[in-house]
Each structure stands twice: as C-alpha cells, then as structure tokens.
Amino acid sequence: MNALPSLSLIGLAFAVAGAVTSGCVTEKTANVGGGGSNSSSSGTGGSSTQASEHISEAELTRMTTYLASDDLDGRGEGTPGGELARAYVIDEMVRCGLQPAVGGSFEQPITTGAGANVLGLIPGSDPALSARHVVLSAHYDHLGNCQGDICNGANDNAAGVAIMLGVACALAADPPPQPVLIAAWDAEEPPTFMTDAMGSEFYAAHPVVPLEQTDAVVVLELVGGGLWPGHQGHYLAGAELSPQVATAVWSTPVPEGLLVRRTALHMIEEQPTGHMAWSDYDAFRNRGTPVLMAVNGFNQYYHTPADELATLDLPKMARQAQYALDLMRQLTLGGEKPSFVAEGADYAIDAASTKAMLEDALTPGSGVVDVMGLSSASRSKLEAGLAAVTVLADQLGGGAPASSQDVLTIRGAFMQLFCYTYPMYTEDLCNTM
Ligand SMILES: [Zn+2]
Image 1 (cartoon, rainbow, N blue to C red):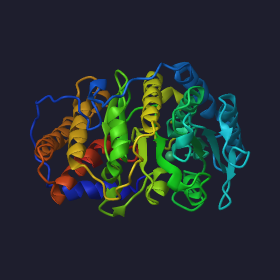
Image 2: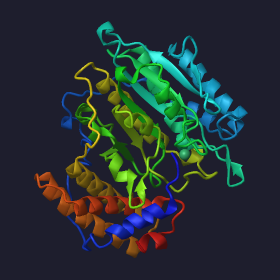
Image 3: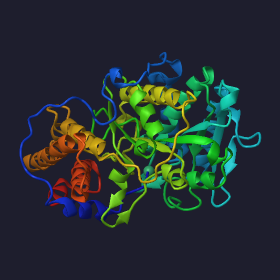
Image 4: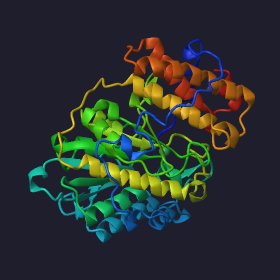
C-alpha cells in the first residue's frame, strides 16, 4: 500500500471541520460495523468451515517469519531478496498442489518493469463453473531498504501473503465449486506504484484468465497487525460496488473476537485534492471487475524499519485467515455472477461502520485513546465525530438520502481516527484539523 500524499488528509479534515458537532455520546449500539455483526446469525446461510491446519497460527507464523526476515532484504522488486520471496511463494504453491497458471509456469514476468507476478490455479469442483474464477491476491514485494535500514514489511505485506498462501492450501485440499486463481503481485510499492509496471496493473492488462471470466478479485493488504496495538479491527472495502459481493460479505461468519467493519473505497479514496487509489484493487476496479480489499489501515510502523514480525498480532492474524477462507467459500459457491456498479455506494453502511470504528477507538482500555495515550483534546475530537456519525447513521439507516455534506462528515470523522495512527502525523497536527 502506498503512502498518502501528506496534505490530502489534512485538507480533507479542514473541509469537514465545520460539519462535525461536539458532544459526548453515551449511546451504546450493537456491533454492526456495517459489515455483519460478530455473530454468524447476521449472515444469510454462512457457516464456518472446518478449522484448517493450513491457516493455523503456527503455519502463518512460519511463512511470515521467513518472508519478513532480513535474508530477503526487504523484498524489493527485481532484487535478489525479491527473487527469494518469489521462489518461496512458488514452493508453497507447489507444496499445496496448486497448478501453474502461466503456460506451465507459476511466473508472469512483468515485461514493462522488473520482477514477476506468481500465479497459481485451484480448479473448481464443478466443471460447469470453470469459466468463473475468483482471484485471491496479495502483493509480495516491499520497499527493500528505507530510512537507512532494511524494511522487512511484516504487516505490509508479508502477513497478507502468508494468509493468502494458507487459504490457498486449505482451498486446494477441499476445492470449492468455482476455480480460484491465487495471485502474488510484485511491484506494488514505489517507484512502480500506479504505473504500468505495477504487478497487478500488468496482470489486468495481460490476464491469464480473461477478466470477463473473473467474478471478483480479493486483495489482502496491511493485515496481521492492528491500526493500533491490540486492535481487532478488520476493514473491508469494495463490496459497495457489487450487490453479490456484499451478500457474500454479509454471509461470511465472523471469527470470535474479530471486529469486521465494512467500509468503502470512496471513503478512503476521495480527497479534496482529488482521487487517490491505494492498492492492487485499482487495476481491476478500473476495468469493471468487482473487488474487495481487506485492510487494517496505516499503523505507526507503516513504511518504516519497525514494521517487523514482533509488531504483528498472530492470534488476530489467524482469525483474519479464517475469515478470508470463509469469505472465499462464500464467493465461490456458483451463485449469481457478481455485477459491477461503478458508482455503487451505501452511505448508511458508511455511517454505521464509521460509528462502530469510533466506538472501537473510544473503548476504555482497548481503544486508540487509551492504548496510544492520546490527549483529552484528541478524545474530544473523536467523540465529536462519533456524535455526528451517530446522527447520520440513524437518519440514513432510516432511509433518508445522504447530502454531499453528510458524506463529507462521515469521511471526515473516519479520517480523523486514521490521522492519529499514521506515522507521518503528530497528534497535535491531527487536532488542528
Ligand atoms: Zn506499502
């Protein structure tokens, strides 16, 4: 995931500063999050799959430990460390019985740059669905060196690759009706971010499975850790662009303890300075393919040498892997083919999700205010945002249309929270917004 232009967040918050009202909110609401509650009863028939040894905490730790080790020197695109990472991903795919997806090879060289994507196939169990693939993906490259040190990128994105590989192994052992393409993207990070040499962009321009035969693309990005230490939030964006993908999300059971919050791409992308895409989903969304990104947001270790294995929450990572496996099961049942709604948005869900996120942030003991020791001024900022989105969650949830100011208010409250965890910003700066 690439860095936010530093002024965008500030500008956005200034734009909405007049929209939020102050006040202390005491109302305790259900754990909606806009993305299904923490009970599987909110689903429409989803049931948790068997616990799989392939996504055990031990397995995920084994893979992440190697991918985030100094031996790989930060997995820079086109470097020996990047090649070691690629070889490891291929070895794991072979070990789990995936088929090479690129004319007998697992590698798709990126001819517009350096490096290569790794693509493995899990054939589906129903031949009638063989032309309806679902892609599960994560970028395996990282920055190489940064700030004069090796940047191992445990959270960005060794953990995402480990979850992807564990889920791939579990799916290969018990194939779903639809085929699954497992894609480890190279070259997501700068300097190739958002260029035609970005691995996901190169793939979308040169797909091994036609995009018309691709139901949806799931992207794992910045997972395995927390927005702040100990936080169990697991954010999903993109379901607003496809009713069928949204149904799959609602139907996926939530592992005990994981706080699934369904947000939206527009919530993170629309800046006062313009549109800002974030990760590998962009290449597919731009071509009309449904996408879903699972992401935990930028924490204090983002793109620094401190993004190490020790910062990850391994039990949470196992819960995220279980969620990813169950989500993939829901997406590969062979139901109605997902449609794509380019301007899809559900502001009632956005308001409810932001409300739930702010309640998480203000929770005594485990919220960002207590864990990161934020000031009373910061607490007041978050409480003001919560008050504003609580009003909107009620109004919009009751069927009222959202005004453009309402949308800015929701985004502003959302961005205020993320400001406190982003390593480039000081708390004081966040509070001037
Ligand atoms: Zn990154």
